[in-house]
Amino acid sequence: VQLQASGGGLVQAGGSLRLSCAASGIIFSDNFMGWYRQAPGKQREFVATITRGGSTNYSDSVKGRFTISRDNAKNTVYLQMNSLKPEDTAVYYCNARSTYNPKIYYWGQGTQVTVSS
Image (cartoon, rainbow, N blue to C red):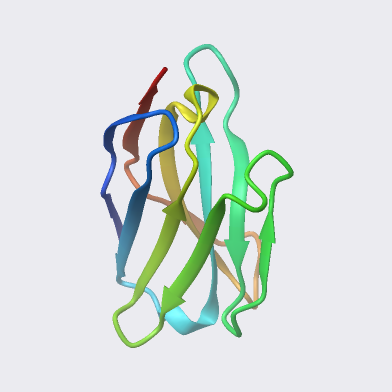
């Protein structure tokens, strides 16, 4: 199983980035897909998830600024991040979790997002 995240980078506060995560080795449409992040010295935290049917859930800290979406034909999940803030700086990780067995999940390698003030 591979979850290949990309799209991170350095952006000024107020700017936008779009993260992508391409999955292989899983039946993509059978998985909840999600994004999590980990800032230096902090625990990994939930950002957003999307069900195979397209229902979404967001943390309060990103609601209204970030949008998660998925393309089941391309086995890819996206995270559109707008109005970025310095506190959004973190390594962002893609996660796949089986719809049928939540104990089966996978992590991608992470992509760095840095927001300068």
